[in-house]
Image 1: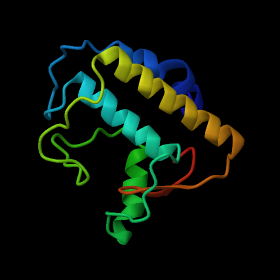
Image 2: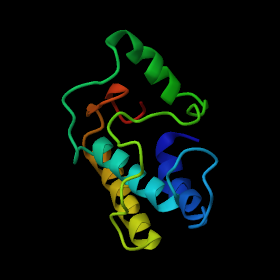
Image 3: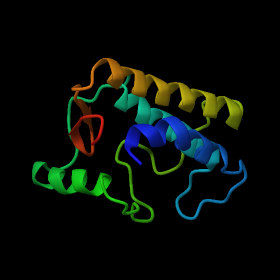
Length: 133
């Protein structure tokens, strides 16, 4: 299945299937923190949050891009240099509102790349990415 089909047909139902009280397998984020974090990631991917710099060393970017195209999981407790050590407070009053925000950001991402399929977006960790990368 390609990325677009997954995002359109499976991603949100998979995220919605996670129980609000699900204990994390690792890390400190609860379900709502994770959903809000993914909304932020999609906001970067859809151009609403713009990063001009890349935090990853230039020589490591090809390996990082190879990683995101693989089925490999993130290492447990991977530190995001853009986030504090403790999870941010919830932006939304409940998980349903956070899921609605994520759904909007995913749809905006899909619509953006539908209109501009050659667009490149800078990710602060993975470098310059197109729709498939």
